[in-house]
Length: 624
Image 1 (spheres, rainbow, N blue to C red):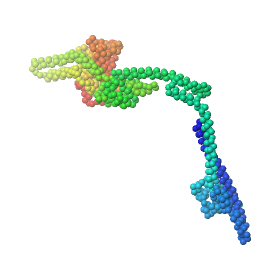
Image 2: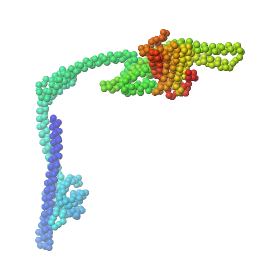
Image 3: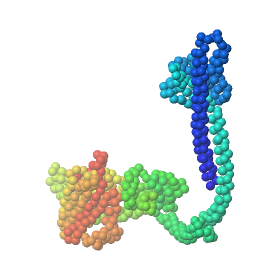
Image 4: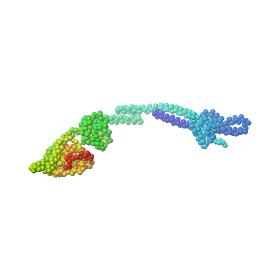
């Protein structure tokens, strides 16, 4: 309140100063102008009298010359000017001149021209003489502030002239300064009175507020049992009651928050324990890819400690897998988790490790993504187990093919034996017979080579191959066995190359497994249609359509489960291994069937649009 009073009084002093200064200046200037006009009137009267005496004295210079000289001196304007300057110390200079003749101090009508202001005095003189009105202006001459008064004089029967009176500005400044001092003195007295009164009044008002403030401080420090005993019924009493109600509510809500916090702490510790005990590697990142948190399994799998990677961007994705990030980021932006079946990551020691990764967004209360959680599972042991299953299924397939291969080899051997016996009897070598025998030997060599490639364990090496030739090789291998069961292969292949990035032996194992299943589903014989064509979106589709008994919906749902089979001597692993191989090639394995109408197996693989010339080279040289 005292500060407010000081501010009000300060503003009052400033306004009073400005108002008093302006009023005093106007009054003083008006007085100066009035004095200037009186002096000008006196000068003009003395000048008129002086002129009259001078005209009357013409021709009488010898008579009473001294009397007229005294009269001329007494009525001279110079005498009036001297007495006016002597009587009023604030007057500095009085000058009279004709407007048209004023050029310098030698052309003055009377007075002096010591306070020169040649820059604009001519304009002021002309303005006064033309308008016939007086002019007062504030000027600086030789660094001194003065008032210039210009009074036009219009004598009868004589040319007009202008009287310029210079007066000091000091009286006005002194009057203003004195008034300001008085205002300041009065304001200080009033300020003391206001401060004293404010102190007394504030004491009555502040004491209850101080009591309330003290209690509020206790409340802010956590003492919610505090209560204000206040019997007043004014606004302060209402405030005290509201504070008491707020203390009650805060105490209640604080207890609830404590209970919730304890529950959350227990849940948090439990979740952290579960996450740290999980076998899968978990890491959480922000939207910029910086690591926020990892679990023990992550440290064990990848080799980094949590302390050394927290807050950093961990680049452990190989260059060959960089495109995965764009795919799962797009899916995460739509609020959907992304599951990557299998990929590769780099460990701290530089090793590449096969993992399956699932990525999910973490949302806030408004549904905005705030961080990303990734779960990695080491697929090393899983892949080893799948490789063992593939080999077991491969051996079973090889065993089943052995009878067909033996029969396929027996036919050309019989031909060779007959021609050799014929040549032995005749003693002649027939070139036609020789060409046939060489052809049969080439066929035996091809069949044995395909069988060995399929049976011999080889390192997994992905290459670019034309899938038409791969399917053709399998048809050649199984053609003899199909004829034994009265089954015919009908194939429809695309006329243009269909290149895929694959491990050819694994694909052959899948195609053999599918064709064997189709042949076993047709005990009475029939036709198996094979279609190899280009699908949309850079895909290659391989379809195997049989005329077997078909599969019921109940059995169709269970196909691909380990050890599920409807065959008497089946293992239930063939279809599962085939599906895993196709998934490893980033493809799809689909089965459509209906009882009594046969089965359609569709294998879809990613197509390669650009490849090396040697990649498209077939293994056997022909499409079946």
